[in-house]
Amino acid sequence: MSTVVDTLQAPVTFTEGAVKELFKLRDQQEIGDDFGLRIGVEGGGCSGMSYVLGFDQKKEGDQEFLINGLTVFMHKAHGLYLLGMQIDFQDGLNARGFTFNNPNAASTCGCGSSFSV
Image (cartoon, rainbow, N blue to C red):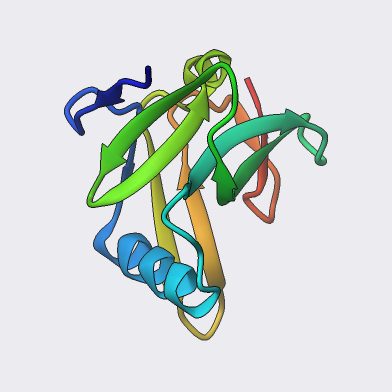
């Protein structure tokens, strides 16, 4: 039986721009209701760890959160690295894409998609 945790306990937050872009992507890609947004980390990248952000189905060991109307899946072990992180979407002339403001990162790479702790 899955447990949905409310947004007050969710480890990450989204800006309004990120939420808008995520709903837009979900609709454009015709993502089914059995999918949620996966947030996580994986080894690799120029700083040691890279962020994972994409639509996926729930897997064993996942926690499930409802954040700004989005179902979010995150493996329990990833909370240590992502607690307090804010995800934004930039749509400017100099940068376009999702950005990760992670207070746990000791350093980040120039592109902002990998970090070290």
